[in-house]
Image 1 (cartoon, rainbow, N blue to C red):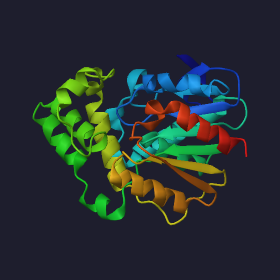
Image 2 (cartoon, rainbow, N blue to C red; image 1 turned 135 degrees about the vertical axis):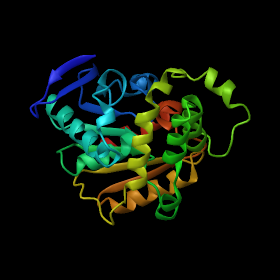
Image 3 (tube, rainbow, N blue to C red; image 1 turned 45 degrees about the vertical axis):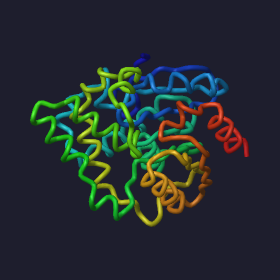
Image 4 (cartoon, rainbow, N blue to C red; image 1 turned 90 degrees about the vertical axis):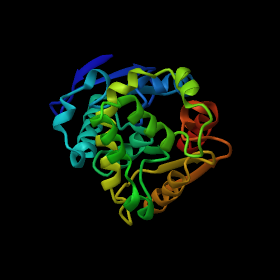
Amino acid sequence: MQSTQSTAAMDVEFERHGDGQPLLLLHGGMAPVEYWGPVLSAFDGYGAVVPQRPGFGTCLDSPAETSADKVLAREVSYVAALADAVDGDPILFGHSYGALTAIEAATETPVEAVIAYEPAVLPEGYRTEADLADRMASLIQDGERKEAVKRYIEQVLHPDGIDDLDTWLAEWPVWPDCVDLAEEVVRMNRSVEQYRLPDRLDVDAPALVLSGTDGPDFLRRSARNVHDALPHSRFVEFDGVSHSGPAEASDLIAAEVDAFLQK
């Protein structure tokens, strides 16, 4: 990774691909920077900036000292530092928790546009009953770290069930290394459970909110709620695409993003 010192006096780490308009790609919960590998060729006309979120990978900046209620603020500050480190106002493209971070960062940081694929925002009724963080924390306390991560994968990536999770995991590129992130994912989930979507998001930049029909129903509903809360937003739902949409259908999504940005 390329490392730089931002004007906000914060060390930021990122990979830079291409020389076009800066496109900051913000990964989600269990996905490291490698998540964006299949996506990069679809956005070769941009200067893709792929950071490692704080608390993940080489950016394990004492995450245990970051409480759940400060996780989102920490990540928003990190995106602001990244925006300072690139030339011009960047485009923010976030997936899942990265999408929530992108939207919140755009309320404070000048950006060209925001693209959010299924932001990690819970509908009110679902949020009040959410207990994924507690269930994961209990398993971790009992020494069942892998089982804790499996609960996250089942609820977020396979909400309709999966016949053989272990077989699926054996083919998942980040398994079992992602188990090291278990505590950070608990903090992230607590942050999501605490977050309340305002009636109006103070984002001046144009926004594109994306979803897939095969993703979790609660995230599809939340994507529409986020779209409604943004003053300048377009909503697109892709038929037959799951929560892993950016990596799963990168060409399809890149075409929609290009059309949106060129208007």
